[in-house]
Length: 460
Image 1: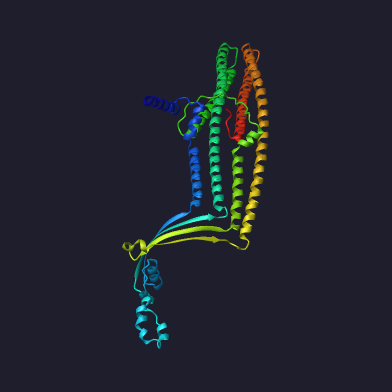
Image 2: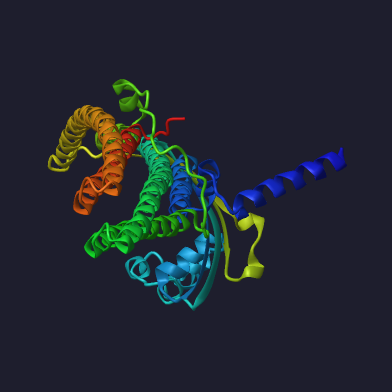
């Protein structure tokens, strides 16, 4: 069994190594790498983790607080010194000046007024005293009008929003990765078509050279061919530069060097999402709905001010004039409950509740507006895709015709039935159709990706 597990782990490591270091990267492998290596996704994951910790923090208020207090003091203040002695259970009658009182008892009852007016020196002018106190205090809220539960729900909703934001970042980065792959496919297809044209121009160039040498063509004809060849080379070079830019961008997305990819088909199939499915899956709407839930919880928080706050408190402590003086018989405890209820504050609580209600209604209206806006975008994108599909069909036919016309004019030129200018014009039309078709296909891909982004999903 141990051998099997070792072999399995080795195979997984080999597979991971192949994904990370393969020369040709597939779209599936790129998306897999993206999930773990993209820095923006990592940052979004940390935001989500932070929000989860905040939920625990908010929920922790349900359990109250336990505090340890250590007091160390020295004072000759009469109130403090007497209080120190009482706290450590060390007070005596002598602290009240009873020695002075008893010393004058012999003159009673004649000196009773003077005796009662005597100010005890030991009580009013005590010696300095140290105070060491160790105390445990536990406080627990029993009823807060729903504030703690509402704040916990708000924290949970904020965690959900962060989770949705992470999903949105992942969706955005997957979209950018897929678009880069499909853009690369279009570029390669465009380069392939231009290279075919370049091959034809090179053949025409050789033919024209021979005709010039034999006196059947003019030097200007050769120059026109060479100029057209240079133009095609310039377009190919521009597309190659765009390929390198795409490789750089993919390297940025995947946080690793990418020098070669396996491109998918240049045309993307139309997603099968219905309008309702898109609205249900849309992350922006989910975030807006979660925000509406937060507004509802804020209403509950504002209304909690109408109710009393009830809590309990318990503490145990021991005190002495030194740490060595601590003992069980000097300890004490206190338990109790407290109710606080604000009965009037100038209408502030009422205004807070009304404002929370207004904000809730505003957010509810914004959610409905967002739904209508997304529904409008869906209809616009579907219409644009339909229009582009028709344009692609039409341009494919026009390109087919342009190729046929160019071949015909090239043959007629060889037979000296037309001029080189006419051949170049037809070839320019051919190149124009190729570039125009490439541009329209790219627009169609963008519109389909935009529809997928609205659904925040990838059509498999």
